[in-house]
Image (cartoon, rainbow, N blue to C red; front, side, top):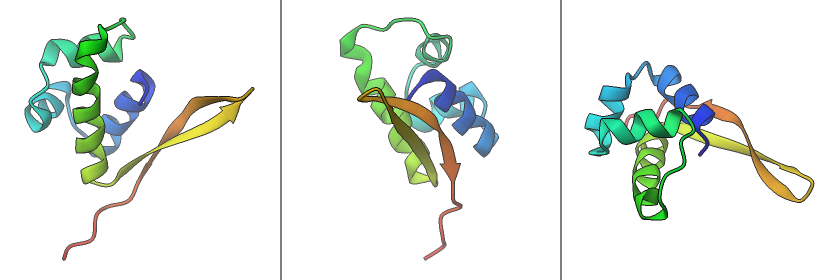
Length: 84
């Protein structure tokens, strides 16, 4: 998940950074720094995974494309989860 995809996913869900923080137990400072593209230490990668998992649990998908043999972020999709 890229910083742009994180912002786009929040916008699709109409979530604030604080709401994402509360939904994931990821510190607000990390979300702000991540979305601003600041480099994070590798040991904080678990926070990014927690955010991505929370988005996917409510129907957000992350699109990637292959460009020159490299995976590149290409947006997000949203499908409202069906009630069971």
